[in-house]
Image (cartoon, rainbow, N blue to C red; front, side, top):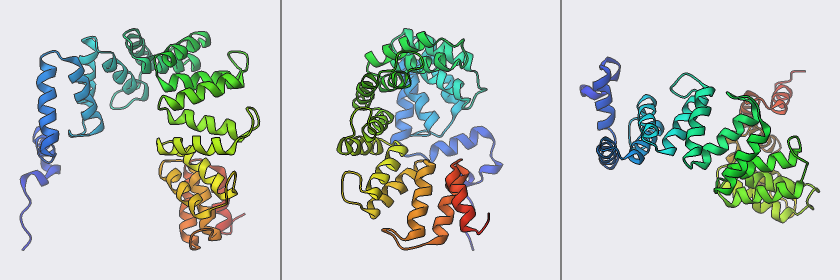
Length: 311
């Protein structure tokens, strides 16, 4: 005879409060202790603790995932003058996570946070002014905000400013300035800046240097930037700067694909079709092409059609 279900396993029949209690009971003791500690501190108007507790609820890290509770805690932190609380609340409203999407409100929250010293908020607000999302488009203000964020140590601010100088749409085009900003972003922990640095060194605008490009792509990939992994895979497959190694290429394409990069999925499909560094596997290739196609990568769709014998 199978054992009877415990009360906490009957989640579909539980009232919300009891379900929450059961979810909390399933968490490790360390997480519950941390929640209790931060809750007590938040009640005593320690607003940094309110923000930290909000992060735990938003991410489901040490606490049962509850974005509505996270929103309440971020709001409390923000109202108490905590800049990161305003920033995190702004992200929820900008992306519509657990709340109705409201770019205008997000911009106001970012402004409040930026004024209080959150350089992440300054960078986010700059991007909104650069695109006209929730605010009147103002490219000059966007640049000022990116610069402020970059000067404050926010890598994304440096990267976004680099994009401005590389593109030359808001300011006079300056590739050397862009390269310096991308490297600065990379050094400040923004993996996208590392990828952009790699891209420049794979071209001829700052002088092609495959060794430096590979180093930047590796840093990007290690930092979680999927396109950096994909680009490093291409270098290994083509033998750019070092001996061709399809097995290593497959490894990086796999990382890229798992990280959501459609090109990585498509290129890994090619590896399996031809059996370069891996055993040939048409079924696996078809799955990978499908993933790439679903992510909007046209080459993946084309290869999938060819594999199925369709025109």
